[in-house]
Length: 505
Image (cartoon, rainbow, N blue to C red; front, top):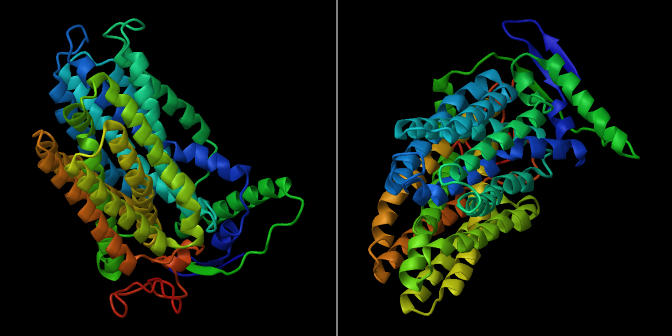
């Protein structure tokens, strides 16, 4: 239902958000998950493949005049820089131009850059297209997470977000195994195998691009931008498809919202909203992203060196250990995700962060005592990352659902860029020095830093996390364009009421 009034902008009253939130899970929702959620698999594939092919690229006959250090150093830094800048650049456009247009454009950028990486003939070409690959991937996160949150019913939003974000590690496992085959010179020539790993990424992106053609624009975004007739057609089509699967009528939607439509929101207004009106939530976002970034660097950045230096694991076998760790990472969000919708965000976010931090402290102590082997160290890492992966995924979930609709993509982009920069720049600079000395005490210190920041983030979540489980996005944070009630201001409970009489803190 929608009514309109004349004026400088149309004012509509609609039940479309409630209609989307009351939908039961269906085949249509699986299409959304497959079409949009696979970006994390691509990122996991990219990161893992480049790490595993570094030694091959530096060998004579690889076809590139590049050193292993340049692959893991300069190329990795450029990928991170591309991801950070891409997130910010495309994130702003996602809020202005729409979710669908951007998740098609950014995937096309990734596809082209990855394909062109595969035909690298010189170092500068390889560096350029590593940057552009990251530029596409960074933009994907803002567009994808915005669309997923706005299309998935409120009852399932938490577990779906966590499962999708955790799928990064499926890509990591696939990348590890793919590298083993592609780098086998008995199968592929030295200057061919590594190119095929990038080419396969481009092929996967092309398949995903074809699937995404059937994913609609977010009806919530359309409503705010004056395209309510289109939003109505999309939601009615979804309802018809789901109705055909069921033997009983769809439940009635509950609640309406009145929106004063606007074409755009200024960058200044976005900044004021996120960092002033919702500053407690902004602090929470910072804490969650920085904590998980440093924990992952404390473990993963030097994990190969730790295994070879302290446990005499042959360098060619470290990939198998990494695959085991990656599987543990994936099962955390997969098995714990439902609890974020049932037990609740605050308990689960703070609990996963604190548990992973405390387990890493315990791992550091056991490592310092010399009681661990390569297998038991890997088991400890799996236990830590089982909880840490769910916590890290919930960081993305948090910043995608606790800010107003008009700022969503830019908020995701900003916090993603902060976390990625901390993890991809500050983390390696710190942890490479510590884990590279070959001293037990330095590696223990690296673990302790990551564990301490994770615990601090867990405490921040215990105090600041928003009870967003099973609540509509409009209830968690009123749209800036909502006409029936002004958005939260910096007064009161730090601007975190977000939903009138029902507090969000």
